[in-house]
Amino acid sequence: MQCSDFHKIADSYLGDELLIETNHEVITHLEACPACRRELAARRELRVQLRAAFANSAALQPTPAFTNRLHMQLRARALHETTTVTWGQWMAIAASVLLVFTLGLLATRQTTHDTSIELVDSGRGNQNEATRIESPSPDTTRDAVNLFRAEAAELAAGDHRDCAINHKLAENPIPLEEAGRRYDRAYINLTSAVMSGQNQLTGGVQFVGAHSCVFNGKRFGHIILKEGNHLISVLVTDLDNAPAEIAAQSSLEARQAIVNSSVEGYQVSYLATTNHGIFIVSDLEAARNSQIAGILAPSVYNHVKRTERLT
Amino acid sequence: MFKRPRQDERAREWSAFEREAMPHLDALFRIAKWLMRDRAEAEDLVQETFMQALQSFHRYEQGTNCRAWLVTIMYRTRGKRIRAGSRLRLVSDVDERIAETVAFEPPTPQGINDEEVLRALEHLPSQFQEVVVLSDVEDFTYKEIAETLDVPIGTVMSRLSRGRKLLRAELSKYANEQGIRGAGAGK
Image 1: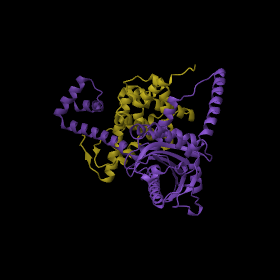
Image 2: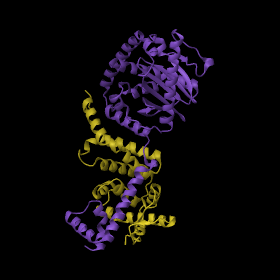
Image 3: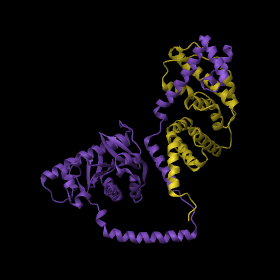
Image 4: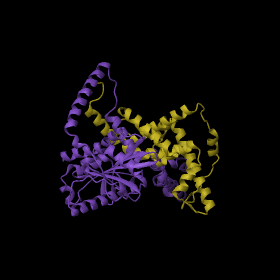
């Protein structure tokens, strides 16, 4: 083999596209020809540089929000694809829906306390408008609870800031379903729970993404929505480090109250189930954030409660 | 009652799709972003590609190169969009002739950073960029590239060879401007 022959097939050799016999000829030639070895090294180096450039370029990587959104759309399409239904089948479906609706209405009347959620103020922000509707509790208990809420609100606001807005968490987010299997069942179908509430929102609130992320060592189920240029985070986390007073609060009304506060310029609406905290965080006006929380909270609250009963 | 797969079959299909196709999402996005330049358009293209792939996943042969299959769908989707956007087809053998004029193979310069490599690649005519990216970045075989781009294997080989020469020439030009030394004497 001559050097000119090698130059013609060097790329094919690098791409492992040659016949075994030709490969042997190339190897034999390379052993005897330093110039062609250098040429081969140069071509190999070019491939390495290109691969590294593509792998390292931030501009060429998809955002976690896009990846999550697409994953969810595909999943929904795969598992719940719409189908062609005949007129007779439509009638049967309509009758079933009517029956389910009627039964649902009856059931709702019996369990209204499950979804009624009140708005209160934490005292950290909007103090003038505060109307606390909590069950009486000793001052020490209240202080512990308020301190815990304040810390929890700070964590939620921090996750909203570093994850939804700045994308700079130390640990990469993982899909909610995976987090649901590995860490907390409340994350499974959390998106559906938020979306069922989101359908009732007016003002063009759109879904952006969903995942599970970790901020300051705390894991959250994180649904990101958007209204205009404002990102809204719906965050769910377990209250494993909550003070005993939180669990000791037996008043259902107190547990279901939505507490509004302001942390570093973000509005945080918070409510708790027995074992979980639910946060709605955004840089919207306090009233709007609270309004969104009031609409989203029932379906998320009931979803989380259901998973707690299963655990 | 309904003409559709049972729920457990759907779950199995989705599970297979998730296992085979979803791991290639990042790679597909990188190619799409490179092709479209615009992030929103790239996201749109990747979304349509995966939706179509999901719909025709039953045609995918298990054990074959799933990424190549997805990239082929993406190129066809993009081709349809281009045709829908314009009835004119750009035929540029001028670029091919330009490539023919690169008679020498300059050494690959060292000390060039990632952004400069990408900028040099951008300067290549698009048909050379395509084959270089699919071969050198995505590690596609000549056959897979030929099927993806719907061109003969011979065309893939010649475009690849010319594309790499052009890229080295671009990098060398840049290195000379910056006073960076070359790696390997070449000739």
